[in-house]
Length: 273
Image (cartoon, rainbow, N blue to C red; front, side, top):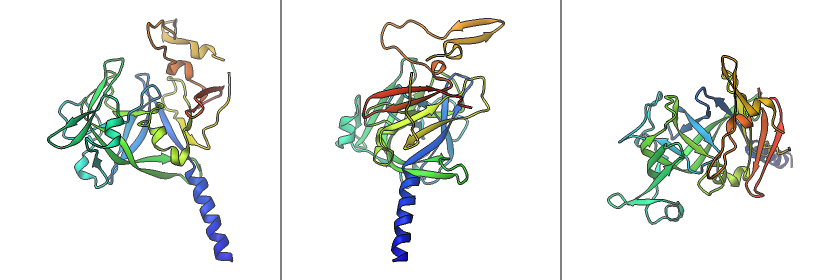
C-alpha cells in the first residue's frame, strides 16, 4: 500500500513538473528577443529569435550553401542520431504551405520568407529540442522535447545582421509552430514578459502550459515612444498598408498571454525585470 501510494505521488509530481515550462528570453540590441535552445543528441546552446508573427521553426544547418555569419558552430545533422528527414509523400510535407520535394533524396523542402526580406530554405526534418527550464527556481533543469518538426536551413539570410543568431522559433497558430507541436504536453497557451531594450543585462520569461497566466486591458509612455538620444523622442507607431503589427516596444513591461485554442491575446502591465 505504501509503495503504491508513493508511485502515485511520483506520478503526480512528474505530471506537475512537466505540465509547464519557463525559459529565458534575452533582449537584443538589434531590437529582437532571443531564447536559448539546444538541438540533437550532442546539443550545443544556440540563440534563436522568438517570433509570434510566424509559424515555422528553423535553424542554420551544414552543409550550408548560403548562410549568414553565426558565432556558434552551425548545426550538423550528421552528428545527431535523433535527426530524421521528412519524406516528400508524408502528411507533414503535404500540409506545409509552400513545400516542395528533393526528388533525388525524397526529402521534403520548406521555404520561409519574411517582410524584412529575410528568408530560409532547406530540408524539413524532426529533431530533439532542449530548453533550459526554470519553472522551479530552486531546482533548474533541462527539458528535452522530441520529434519537433523544423527547418534545417541550407540557404538563409537574416537582414538584422546579428552574429549571435542561429534561426527563428515561430510561435504562431499553425500546426508547425513550437506552441502547436508541444500542445499535448503544455496545451496551446503561452505567455511572455519583455523587459525594455535598455535593460540588456536582464532576461525576460517565456512560459508554456499552466504557468502561462492570462490577464487584461493600457499602453504607458515607455510603450508608445522611443528615446533615440540627444533629447529626441520618436513615436513607436507607423502606418501600414497591409497587416498591422503590434511590435516589441509596445509590449515591453507587459505580461502578454496567448490562448491559441480560444484565439485570445491578453495584456497585464507588470515589471518584467
